[in-house]
Length: 337
Image 1 (cartoon, rainbow, N blue to C red):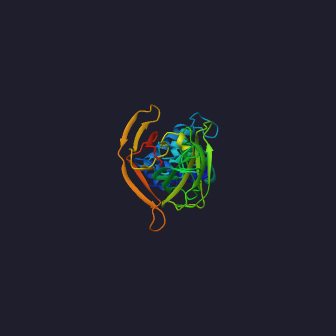
Image 2: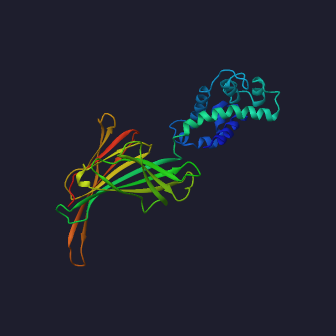
Image 3: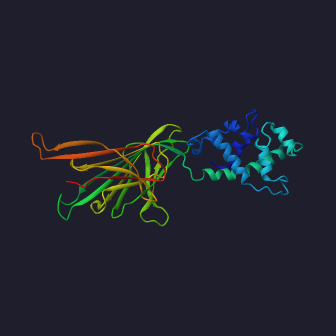
């Protein structure tokens, strides 16, 4: 959200004509309330916006200056129904010593004060995306490609499919970003949008700071999705040299999601799949989750002849109340053929 739009929204609060004070006045600022910070608020979004405005004002200098002799905090508190919540704008301007100003001068005064408040408010929104994640699904599978099924020529691939259900909170959403850590000994080979879900025009992989094993993955949407309508986004990462890496996935939850599920498909019926929640810093196991497993048997061959049978075991875990900053570790037995 640009600063001019924030100033316009704040000016609506200045002109609020009800008797409910700042919290009630925030209902007249719908564009501010559509910011992800308020859409994702656990409590009352109007109260959070009012609190942010008060915090923004508290950050302003209150030393007198030539243009605003009462100090920025006093001017902003007066304009935004904080120090004089029951007074209408004419009375508040009079108490601030601005009642005799011309209309143009009053507008200049409001824009000067609200511009400083808007600058502080923008700091609350700078790092927030324009969408809400409703659901996150991650599916891992390992297989064999190249060479023969056994021997030194065999290569193991690991595929990770991500599926998100998101809801756009802005009218111009064109990208979706997530971070993922490349496990030691895995070799990254490909990142691309999935064939299903909302259409994406490109996919990019960018390093995070100086870390060589952690990257941002960016999906660039082909068009702006409708605001408030759930859509699905699919992405696919492929690694090779999977046989050299531990049979596990570590997923650090860095963005809020209402639900999270992890699944892995392995060849054969033997062995257990496990999933735990870890404190990312201490590495302590906080929760263990129970798998829902299924066995899938597929026969390959021409009609009347079975050349070979494939048996696949799928373990799926549903994470209730996933927590930001927690690491979710999925482990499985290594049996690829």
